[in-house]
Image (cartoon, rainbow, N blue to C red; front, top):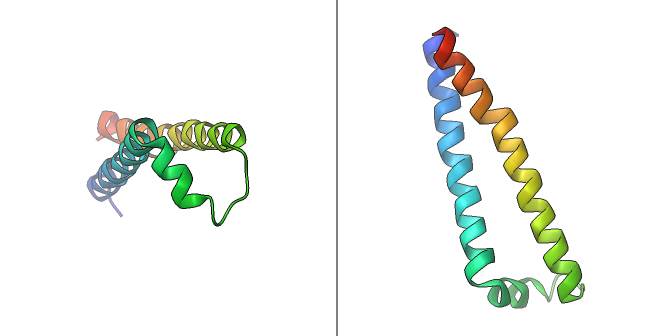
Length: 80
């Protein structure tokens, strides 16, 4: 694999993961009741616990996207 291939790979990983993060964030921020009602049959958690878990997952996913996708892509852009 050359640097160009890796750069393209990380670019598309970043685009897809940022898109997924944005999609998940929009749904959770603008329709939290709908998300909670759809997931309630599978997970028995209070609304407060559900909000805490969802915000924690959003934060963790954002950190993972930055560390595992954006930073390598920018580093490859710099050295490429």
